[in-house]
Length: 141
Image 1: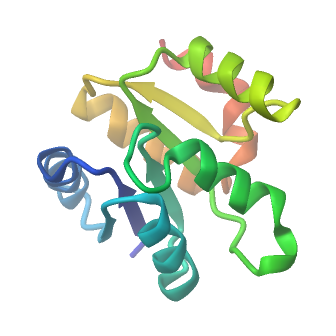
Image 2: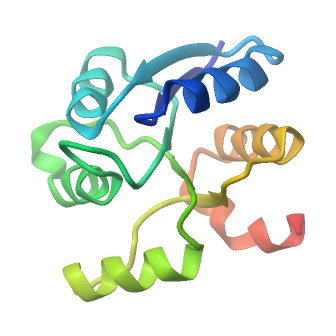
Image 3: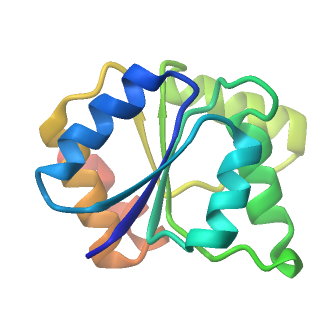
C-alpha cells in the first residue's frame, strides 16, 4: 500500500483529497504547512507528496527548494505532485525568477481538482516512480 503525504493548510482540502485517495486504499499522511511536511517526509518516507504552494510558515516553493536543493540532508527522492490554485505557468515563472532554475516537480494540478484526474495522476507517478511521468502528462488532457 502506497503512502501519500498530503500537504495543504486548508483542512477541508486535505479531507477532500484524502477522501478521494481512500477509494484506492492509500495510506494517508497529512501536514498543514511546509515545516510539518519536511518532518513527515523524513519520518514517514512517503511514496508521493501532494503539495500546495500557498501556505503559512513555509510555503510549497520553499519545500521544493529544500528537498530538491539539499540532497545531502537525506530527504527521500519522492515524486512531487503540486496541487494549487496558482496557474501552472505562473508558478513556474515565479520559481525560475526567484531561484534561477526550473520548478523541479513531477506533475501539477490546478484547483479545483477533479477526483478522477487526481487518482489518474497519482497512480501514474507511483507506477513510473516520478520524474518520467512528466513527459507524457499532456496526453491526459
